[in-house]
Image (cartoon, rainbow over all chains, first blue to last red; front, side, top):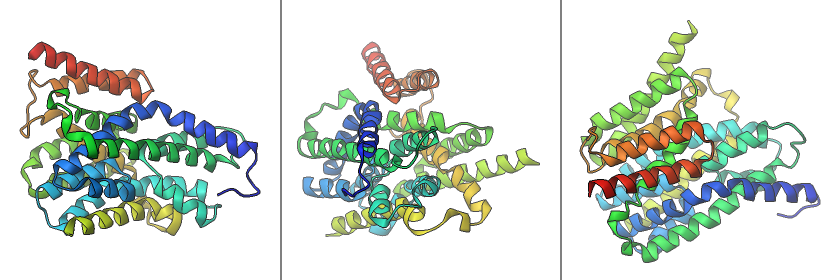
Amino acid sequence: MLSNRQTPNARSEFLAGCRDIAPVLVGTVPFGFVAGVAAVGAGMTPAQGIALSFVAFSGIAQLVVAQLVAAQSPAIVTLAAVLVVSLRFLMYSAALSPHLAHLPNRWRVPLAYLMTDQGFAMGTQHYGKAGDRYHRHWHLLGMGLTLYVVWQAAVVAGAIAGAQVPASWSLDFVVTLSFLVLLVPALRTRADLAAATVAGAVALVAAGLPYKLALVVASLAGIGAGVIVERGHRR
Amino acid sequence: MSEWLVILGAGAVTFLTRASFIVFADPHKFPHAFRVALAFVPASVLAAIVIPGLAMPHGTVDLSLANPRMLAGVAAVGVALKVKNPLVSIVAGMAALWGLQALGG
């Protein structure tokens, strides 16, 4: 990782990334804990729950896997659901790619692996700032590594000790809140709002569908609604 | 056995979607309509996760004032609109839920 390009500038960007992600970690810890608990609660061994977290590093994907493993869904259905909740990564990846296009694969592959909802939101904010952008990938790396270490520690704790937390604490609500705080700033235009409203309504109406298909159907309906409103607005 | 397959598959799917444009493809080579649709993915997927989490606390839709998760969610949205720090909204939402549960229980 260290190269002759590492200067105090790279170091300061890295440390700024570690600092900038810190406010998010208070949501990350209980969310990771819940994901660890959910994996074991679904019938996976603690080792499987932890392995899932290390390879997927995505709270919502881990929760979807836990829910569908618990429901004994076929593997292909589970992976289709993981793909749908991971579609947002496509959009994040497309938005970040111009900033990272000049970097070699030894940078782009780990930065892609470490990309999260929070890291993307703060990373694009940081790239939007004025000034020298030459070392800004170190900022992404600082955020990504910090979040990764804290997340995995929380998942391990949840997978090992999880079943002890009383249900009355409603710790699972942290998951909903973690996504709610991302949703609110994502609603910038009328078309965004239409997409979210339709997706939310369809998610409730379609809740009876098997294998969590409601999530897939609702997401696609929301995307369609957003596109339609955007086109109507342009005309 | 099948759990391990799902675990490896989930790792592949999450990595490939993350790496899609950063590592493999140039987004400008895709049709404009595709990029327009991508722009609505976060709002749609996040809402499809959040709304049932608020409105279906026990597997059935409950839009009444007796549903503390919905009220706590509304409170968290109110805070998120005012305060940029996500931590403040999460703490406010949990505090509201615990407060409402204490009142209701």
